[in-house]
Amino acid sequence: MGRVLIIYDTRTGNTEKMAKLVAEGARSVEGTEVRLKHVDEATKEDVLWADGIAVGSPTNMGLASWKIKRFFDDVIGDLWGEIDGKIGCAFSSSGGWGGGNEIACMSILTMLMNFGFLVFGVTDYVGKKFTLHYGAVVAGEPRSEEEKEACRRLGRRLAEFVAIYFDGKKELLDRVRKSPDKFVD
Image 1 (cartoon, rainbow, N blue to C red):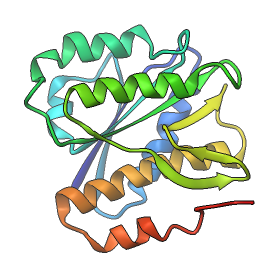
Image 2 (image 1 turned 180 degrees about the horizontal axis):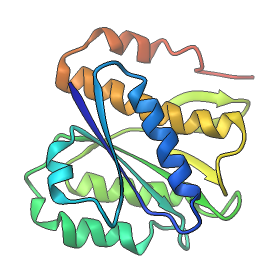
Image 3 (image 1 turned 135 degrees about the horizontal axis):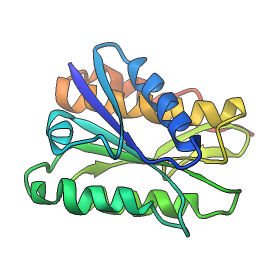
Image 4 (image 1 turned 45 degrees about the horizontal axis):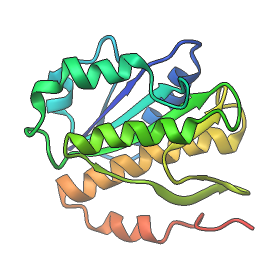
């Protein structure tokens, strides 16, 4: 059974709404156990438990929030070198489009890579000109179906990769590669 941890920080509730949609997507993969935790409640035991982790943050000046950075520095800092090979991804909400949310996702992915996580982007399009290459991103709260589906798709893809990599469910790899949403004109 794959284990997915979703850690998020939120100020206005927008990133929390995204986190719940990411969890919904992860739960859509049969056999996936999901833990959803605010960063203030997440522990290093949660990280040790998980096979895959989605980390979400409000965009703060183009970066992840200080609470997310503190989590990596102070809560799991001593796990460095012990959690290599887990799978990770990112999501972020900004105050507006062009607010730096893809850069915030990259800062999260960089932290995950420094801990040895295998990180990924999603090549699927969830709507016209709407992708999540660096993670799921929205301006404000997820309102449109494309924004909601981006969050769900990220969680589903994380759970699929966990099932493939940790549970040996190689048949899911064909489904991932043949996703019907590779391009929307």
